[in-house]
Length: 219
Image 1 (cartoon, rainbow, N blue to C red):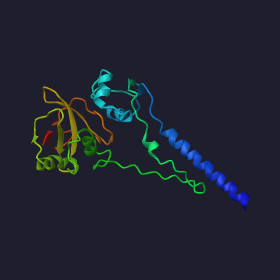
Image 2: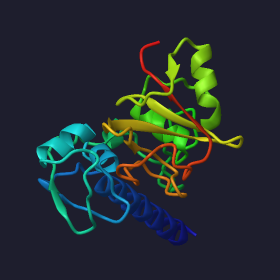
Image 3: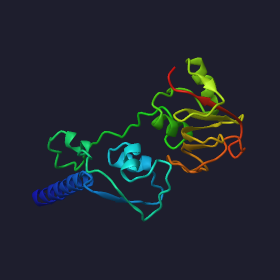
Image 4: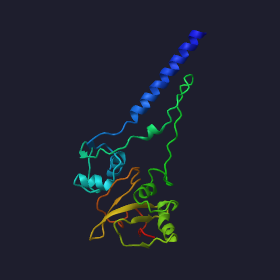
């Protein structure tokens, strides 16, 4: 029995040590001067990975957030990612006979479902309300909170399409003299990350159905 108990403890201790080593290895700080674009990458996702502002990231590569980036392309990044919060884990010894490590579950601070258009705009425009409903409800909800609503596009505004269903929202980054716009958005054609999917386009072209309105910052 003593031998069996000893072997069981040894296996548990070994498993515990392996889990701890794997955890800290995965949590090592990112240390790179360049990033190779992967499928699905955007300036927003890359900037988030390296603890940067997406506009600064684009500028340091002589681009804008609306520039086209392709898989395999390399862009410069800064080496300013802080160590992950793994170091905040209390250095208490785990019970050897359980082999279990408890970790706090990751919690999103957004009040909108991750990947949806409302989540994407809230990530880009922190001034947007936390409880404005579906994209089609945003203009009315914002108006109730004192935000100016209009039909003239403006960089930094939120564009809303009210199609009678869920609607859609996006963040306006540029406005052309002909009234065309460029936006950053999520959940465009079910692509649930933030990016510039359309380039220059007419918001009234019917691709995204519904009446178009804009929410302007500064309530």
